[in-house]
Length: 308
Image (tube, rainbow, N blue to C red; front, side, top):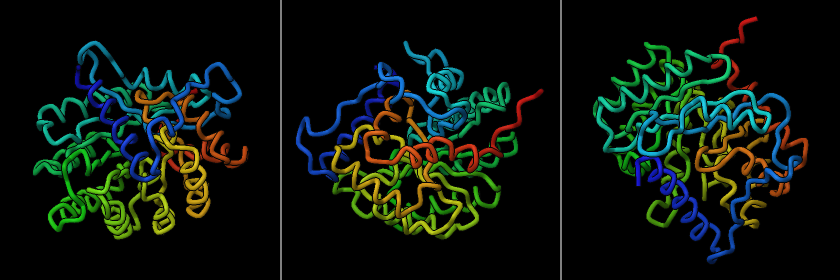
């Protein structure tokens, strides 16, 4: 199994764990992934919009190639016009050289189509060289960084883990970057990490943050993120059981639908699957439209205007 396939399996496993722990669901209780492509009404977005969570990798890694350009094609297939291509350099075994190559690749793709692709470079939060790479990429033009404490084997409940993560948040804030932060901590062994993340983010009111996966089993904590510069994306909702989806709607409304962004976590899930799941969660059509178009308002400055 190649690297990207392993990462997709990890993503699915994390959400499956979330289901069994947070939902108390038994095997088969969760909604099965559905593309929704056969039902065009349920698989399309209003004109415009951004998918803020689409993973991309270097071409030629094994037998699959998930490039920023392919991510954009997937986004456009449902009516979205822009994509944030997210790097995968946050894993603890990522070498500095490999991280640099991946980040340079992403940024180069964004330079080629700046009106439609934005690059979210990534660094392993546990690496001693993470700050250096963050500064290097900012100097090269990067404006978004993906931080994934769980994948980086960083425990935010510990003093060392919190300190390392806080240093990266502080640097991103000082550089006026946007942080796309993994926000799903499934399983009893990670209890309290969601709350620890919320506490860290609240220390950086000037930092624009996208909390991925709606804080997973800690979604009820979303309203505690008080800064209006903190948003949350809906990536992964397709794997939630129906009762949990309905609970999530209440949390989203308490947080503010205007602060919720559309994200699919492609290629693990197609944007059409996520739109279909959102429509079945109990959101009104007006709320869904807001979520599908919020990205342009919240992140529009990260894309360059199209040339006439």
